[in-house]
Length: 253
Image 1 (spheres, rainbow, N blue to C red):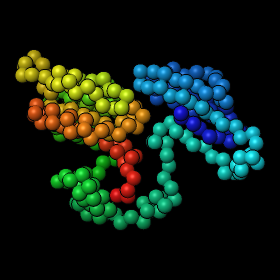
Image 2 (image 1 turned 120 degrees about the horizontal axis):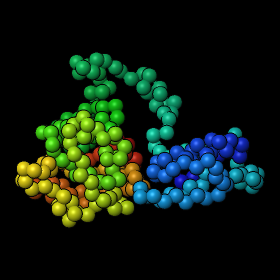
Image 3 (image 1 turned 120 degrees about the vertical axis):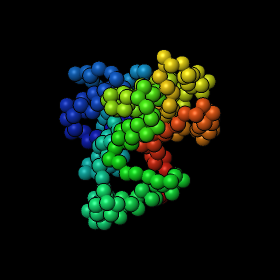
Image 4 (image 1 turned 45 degrees about the vertical axis):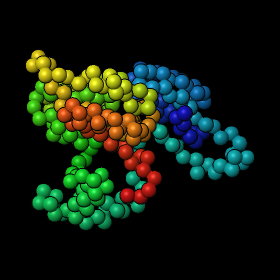
């Protein structure tokens, strides 16, 4: 259930805009009107959402709800969240320097911490998840005409403007995602190309963890182990789109 808890005087035009935002995310056409107090069930190839846009607090005393404390919770996407005052203060007071010369201590510390966290040789900070995915595709697919196998509900396939193709020159070959964000490993094996000179070269396989369009599901470790084993056996690289990996992180990093 996606719920937006709003004050009773929220304009219906604002509710309609939020509702159409959810519809757009699911690939469903906009509407011009709807019942803001009802429960809307939206179904598409990208998933199912029950959307209850408005809970009216008609008896505030019995619910012990203070009018000034009723705030909107916008659950369309994690990208609509805003930094807290503590976050803003941390950014304003951070030590900075010239990153090109490797003299930004905050960036250096961040990269070193994440390299250690993931047991990698090094890490690099980039402004967006889409840029990180594109860099990974270009680094792992060393020649034009290469192919990457990706989930059909993956962010890299649906929401990155085809950058793998028109910037990196890499073809994306999709495989159907299951509701938990995984895919059939037997089908994955069949997707891997041979050495036919007429075909593109399978150079990369991509997973997404946590999986945005599959309800933020965490990919099971057993699946990851088998997936990476198949990649190694076939001499293809694997990349994990971990843009939302820390959505499930419980302990501080």
